[in-house]
Structures are given as C-alpha cells and as structure tokens.
Length: 126
Image 1: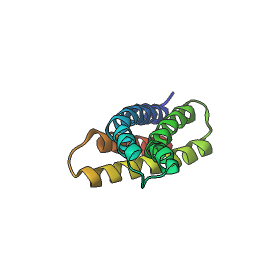
Image 2 (image 1 turned 90 degrees about the vertical axis):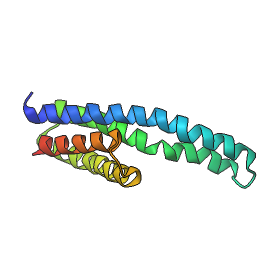
Image 3 (image 1 turned 120 degrees about the vertical axis):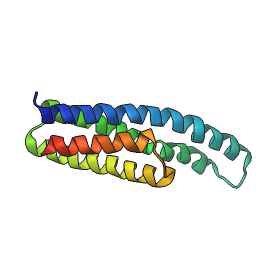
C-alpha cells in the first residue's frame, strides 16, 4: 500500500464515520420532530410523511456508501476506476462541505472533516 492508497482509505473512513454520526443526529434532531409534528397536521399527506425522512437521510446513505467505495477503490480498483470513484465521491463530499459551511457559517466538524476527506481524495487519485 502506498501513500495514495492510504489517503483514499483514510478519506473513506472519515466519510463513512461522519455519515454515521450525521445519520444519528439527523434522526434525533429532524426526523423524529418532523414525524411528531406532521402526524397531527392534516395538511401533510401520508406520502410526504413517509418520504421526508428518507430524503433527509439520503445524504447520510450517499456519504456512507461513498466512504466504502473509497476504501474498496484503494484496495482493489485499477487506476481508472480509482479516478472515477474519487471524482464521484469527492464531488459529493465537496458539496457536503460547502453546503454545511454555508449553512452553519462557523467552524463545524462536519464541513471540516469532509474538507479534509476531499483533500485526501484529491491526493489519492493523483
């Protein structure tokens, strides 16, 4: 294993780890309160009540699977597949970092860690 493989693996571990924490916090802070409020609100239909929690957790799923893909890319993929995996996952992590930094507008572990992971991906695919 060289430094580039290590960078991709570390980016994958960071990405998947942050995704798990993001999923737990999103469920506690957003999904549960939304379910409690929407259950009593007749303006919100059943399909929306079912779909909203899934959409809120979509980024969690995407980031977690992306982290696993980075680990797999570092371990088994050829150079072209590593590049494509890095670009796809890196763009997702970069969007998450920028969106989080814009929304929070302060130092926050989420955007800092996804920024670090994005830099590691850039190093790992070069």
